[in-house]
Amino acid sequence: MKNLKLILVVAAIGLGLMACKFGSSPTATFKTFYEAQKKKDVAGMKKALSKASLTMLETGAKQQNKTVDQAISEGLESPGGKSDKMPETRNEKIDGDNATLELQDEDTKKWETMYFVKEDGEWKIALDKTIEEMLKKLGNPGT
Image 1: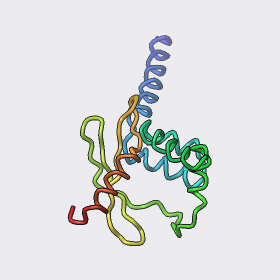
Image 2: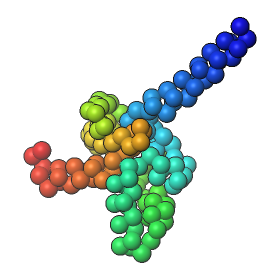
Image 3: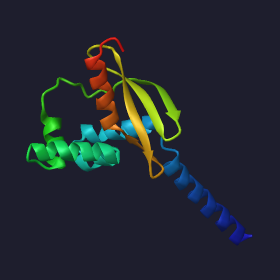
């Protein structure tokens, strides 16, 4: 009987750990990224970014003769007047291994879409796709 209880406890702990890893959501990933950004935790921020996003950042950093970490750190220091309050989020939509989440710009009150991709079972911010879509909107204001 003691062995059965032990097996049940171990199974419950294992299921709990699996739920933590696989229960990730785009919203949870964004919150993790935001908290890392507030703490100026570059490594934490990078963990939340997709492989394609990291490649894009590496390319940009190389063009400036910097490392990705330097480019991210400098981006954190640039004045933007952003508050320490996390943006409001809404309308998380998951479609297979792709997802979107709307974030509200505190200054303009407009809702912007952030893109996500699932890699190795976890949601990652697809910064490359987010920037690509923002540039499309800038180039074509009617969309």
